[in-house]
Image (tube, rainbow, N blue to C red; front, side):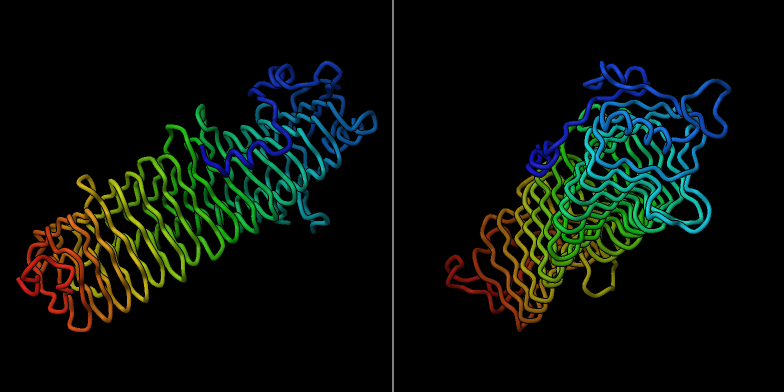
Length: 469
């Protein structure tokens, strides 16, 4: 299990396992024996007797009794602002179709619902709906909150978690926010989905950014969580995002940009991840780092590039992965570093006749290490399998580069390649290894088919030297 998850998910409050039905939730949560149970009937609630006609009034009335151990059942549409301040063990559950709606008129508060300095807060089966004021729907500050079976829609921001907060989001929909579906900031942590029993996955869709982690915050994405149709699916700006664990496949699909990480951010992947059909790119690491540890990963059909690494960013890909069907490159490095090992297939990338395209493109002082073994390969790409150019370096050990429509490995513009045998670099349309006059190769060329590399370092080669063959 992810080290990030183990550190942050257990910090502070451990939420009760509230079930879908309100009564079940009451018995499941600790401390219910002395709890106060009240009902709220807002506009449109079924006919009957209710303790309150306002959720804010219910919270105020219960807090006057005690700051802890209360249960509230909400019916109808409550159009108001609600604040939980310094409260503990509070469960708020909605009956079918229950809504907390943003009031009309100019906003006098930044959020529709705020939890401040509170712990053990559980919110279930409630629709949070924004309006013209475009407030944040749920603001969690220095609090521990669990939501389940909720919908957040039509706002400037769905959920904002910051301060010393820890939040769980399960079986919920977060959609149609102008800016952020979920924003995690200022050392907070969020856990989305269930590791094993994610029967109703969380969906984050049609937002400006689906999820953003900033300023030392952590977002753990579990289960079969789906992030789609956002301008940017997942963004890291000084925070850590971990896709982790279990047998489910997590999906970042159909966004304009799939994942975008800036300097100081981290992406950690443990378990299956699909990054597919994102218009302008799959994963961008601009000064950020990414580690793919294990699982079956699919990075497919993401516009120009599957994974782009730049500005000192780094990629460590050491698991089962397929990177395919990108117009420019499967992996593109511009001043970045990449280590690709194991059962990784990089195929069918690039466009014939275009410059700087192929399976892997390393340029602008980049460093790439490739070791696919016998099960992985760089094959079927329209450009070179591996293009190393503009003062970049590559190291190949036990790499398979074959069946590409241009060179297997092309080294150009003051760049170099080191071959550590055995490699299989054969069957490419051009030379299997081609070094331009201002670049060179070295090492052991065993396993290389047709080669043009006049400056190959013969001191590290078998007797007779490789030269041209």
